[in-house]
Length: 187
Image 1: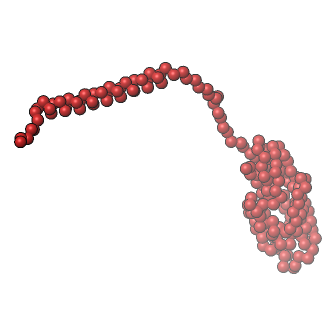
Image 2 (image 1 turned 30 degrees about the horizontal axis):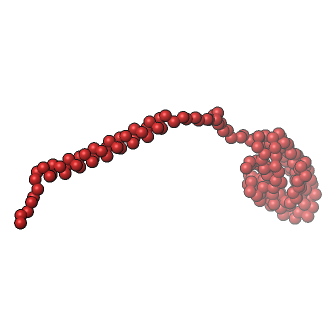
Image 3 (image 1 turned 90 degrees about the vertical axis):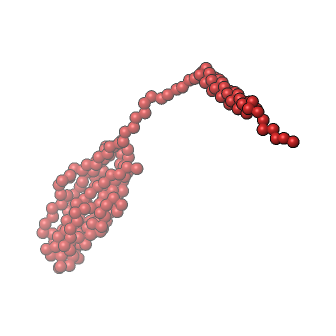
């Protein structure tokens, strides 16, 4: 019994088989790629497109006829004294906006709780309270007399005050100040 280690020819044949199989696989892959390329290249195509899309944001503006001017400069008030002033607020913008009134630059040395205010507008809104109450509205969130305004709308606000006839003696020489603000917001 002897062991047959095989011949060199057997080893060469095995290697040759591997090379033949590898060659066949490479050729098959190359043919597949070539066929896919030919098929996709020969397909009909079509497309469609739109024109250029453009976008721009709106601009809004809010103005009033007293801009930079005081509505009131009331001095030497006595209990029962009253007056009124009007402010026309105009909105411009392609988009409707919510407009509210509030105050800023508030000051009070004891007079604000005794100045009774009645604010009305020609759109049917009204608010009644003291200047101290109104001075509590200091931003859009706490604003009063909410309106929706469209392009070129104008709303006139009439602000009337009366120094309370029951104001105590301690109010003598007291003062108060405020700036009336209207703000418009979209969305």
